[in-house]
Length: 163
Ligand code: GDP
Ligand code: MG
View (cartoon, protein in one colour):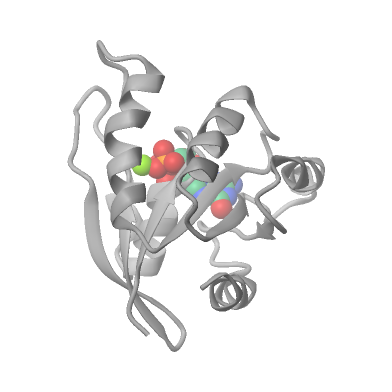
């Protein structure tokens, strides 16, 4: 099975942390330099027996002259176009914010298969956000902790079902 997955979502939800985990890279590489526009990053990824390519949409989140909508049109839409599968990530501790809904609309319009990921779910503080995530209408949220490596078997299952 070969496919390409794009990790999409508003800033700070843990996209790069998930990217590094799937790509088998060191967590120390997560930090983005603020204000620096970076290219989309593509890397070989592995989720148990599933091998694929993953795109991190680092860069569009940094502040700059463009509006959020403008940055979404560029980076995220290019990534969505190149992807066979979307990992749409929210921060379950923060709950569903207006920016999450805006990104969800863009993801929905792409008509690509989506796996909705409720990240930062390693504690009970994520419970309410996990429940809110159902409202996005993007299917069953998968609670994970990208930082702690929790929920990866469920994520694998969701990928298999989405493809
Ligand atoms: P991005 O802006 O979406 O790429 O988010 P990052 O991957 O840069 O992560 C933003 C912040 O959330 C960093 O401080 C991460 O360490 C933190 N983070 C990422 N994943 C998790 C997680 O599963 N649990 C918690 N508690 N923090 C996380
Ligand atoms: Mg990032």
